[in-house]
Length: 138
Image (cartoon, rainbow, N blue to C red):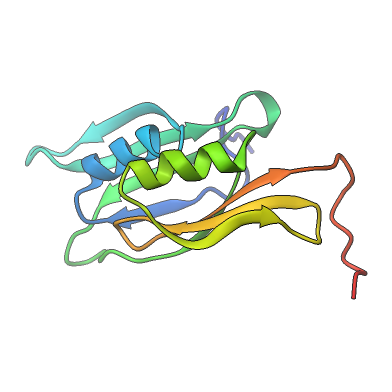
């Protein structure tokens, strides 16, 4: 099985209204890198790709313009960032709405939450320890 560089076995594929604008938000608001887009003859994004991170931990999100057979949907995404406070400020400056203030969480992350203008929820998470998550916490 071949998986392209920057992708994992499971890759998020977001279908949204105004896909080109959404790609701009992912870059300006969340620090992604626009890898490229396939544009349909009518000028809208058929498949855009935005990469987050570098090296082995890089992840690529695919974005497509909603259409009648494939309507827009919403989801929750967990984005690991180097600085949760800075990531929150950038997301808010780019039009997102805060749903959870940044704070230190008992599971070892400094994290806050936003909803972007397309209805996607993003958990902006700065891992504070190199330890794996402890699922045996009470």
